[in-house]
Length: 204
Image (cartoon, rainbow, N blue to C red; front, side, top):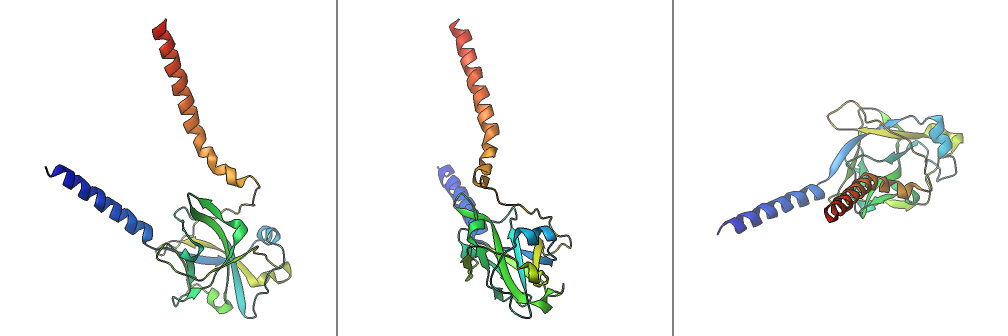
């Protein structure tokens, strides 16, 4: 008699836990680092000038745990906790199952805030509300490359930053995610052939 009710409560509690996890904000520490020549060459072009006394931080954020339903659900905070407006490159967005899982961002900070004791934090999730803007392209002016930095990231309680891989865009990139279907197709084909073979043996 009580089994259906118990089962319903378990399902409800599980769904509530999942909903809470989805809505909760995740965060990592952003670590500004110098740009190498390859990245400067990749982003070579004209963009809004870097304001005097500031440094422009540019990078591709692709953490495995990153996923947002809206571009307003990501922000960067300075050491005081204040939000820093982000410029998001529209052509860099990578979407999967209706959510953005990778993107290039750009933002300006006072140059004196580059020191390690003034940590930057990147946050994302449904609970995050920010006023970001989309731009066509994010570029670096080689003539003033000293005013730019890129970044890596780490967990708040760790000193080691996560490794980063710089990827040059490819016209076929939108199809690469389909490769994970290949093993499934192979298994399905083998099972189908096996079933047909067994069926023929029985008929014989």
